[in-house]
Structures are given as C-alpha cells and as structure tokens.
Image 1 (cartoon, rainbow, N blue to C red):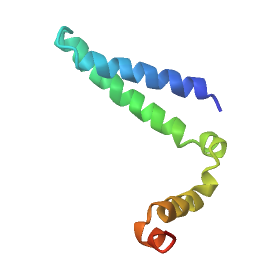
Image 2 (image 1 turned 30 degrees about the vertical axis):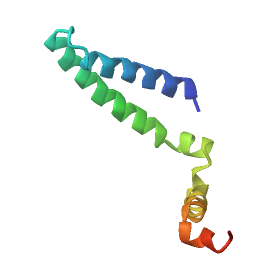
Image 3 (image 1 turned 90 degrees about the horizontal axis):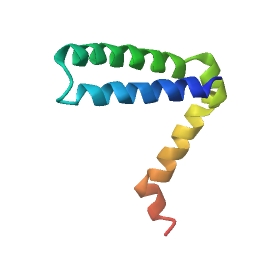
Image 4 (image 1 turned 90 degrees about the vertical axis):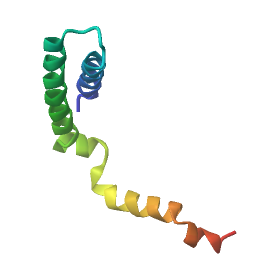
Length: 82
C-alpha cells in the first residue's frame, strides 16, 4: 500500500480547494480547480476503498471497532459502573 501517494493526493487536493477560495484567482482557474478537486476526491476515495488499503487498516475488524466505540460512548451503560 502506497500511503505516500494518498498523502500527496490529499495535499494537492487541499491546495486546489484553497485556490478555489482565493478571491485573487481568475474565475477560469477557479473552475479548473473545482474540477480537479472533484477528480482528486474520486481518486482518493477509490484508493481508500481499495482492497490493499482495507487490508492495511485491517478493515475486516470494523464491526468490532464500531461495537466497541458504541460501548465506550454509551452513557447509560457506564452509569452503573460509577
């Protein structure tokens, strides 16, 4: 899994988003950066959803992690433990 590629794309996406919000940039460039931002979002999402990345983050355990998060944040269940 190439985490550097994902990190680089996220940094480029941040630059493109910042350019869109810069009032000194010409409208044609803003339109281009908007388009690029959407394409980068799609690419980043595709990489994060890839089997290789899911394996890297051990995605098979997501149900257990969610259940544990709910258990830890459930106020009612923790009141009896105080």
